[in-house]
Length: 171
Image (cartoon, rainbow, N blue to C red; front, side, top):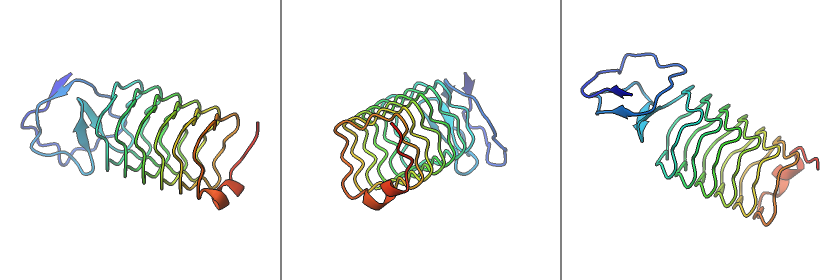
């Protein structure tokens, strides 16, 4: 827990920051960092096991962040960048990931049941053993994605077509 009220962190280098329970409003944070539900969120943040159900993470930049085991149930992660992030074993049921970019991310074992991935870029993503049951994946780019053991029951793959040819399909 940290109170960052009136702190000016604009020239601070934040790498692998682990937080939770952050309170107060700083005068400035380094770009593109933000505070969401008591967590410092930004590139390479350590958000493993973070409790962020229903959080508004739309438009955030979390490249290289560790969100393994995090609870993002029903969160809004639309238009976010999660390139090379670790989202393994993350609860993303009913999460909005529309137009997000997660190129090269690890989403193995993630629960994306009923998640909205429409128009997102998931190039080279590891979705092995992930649950994508009932997920809306219309127009998502899955080129080079690994879907080994993934559950795609009732997922909507409309207009995914050509990108699936380049995905790794093994059951």
